Image (cartoon, rainbow, N blue to C red; front, side, top):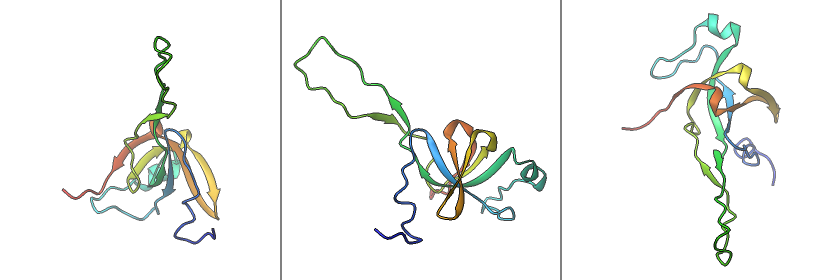
Amino acid sequence: MQLTPDNKLKKLIIVGDRVLIKLRKADEKTSSGLFLPPGVQEKEKVQQGYIIKTGPGYPIPSPVEDDEPWKDRDESIKYIPLQAKEGDLAVFLVNGSYEVMYEGEKYFIVPQHSILMLEREEDF
């Protein structure tokens, strides 16, 4: 499979409760008017960006049932889904995130607990 701009992120799998975020340009403002003032952006304790990919969520341990050994055991892992979704604008703590370079672009891998706020464009 050859990488193109359209499919370059399809090979990435984000694990657990983490999300992949691409930073938003500093002068870009959302349709609802959300933007961080320059003073906050310069300190870089809080950043904002768009969620590109999400992990499956928080894994739930399987219950152990030894009282019925004849039953088939369901070995599939179940997850509690994340509140964050692809396409959301996230305001997150930089201290809790990891900066990565992939295919020449900078992204942040952020655990959901480091996300302070989400803005979602939904049709009502």
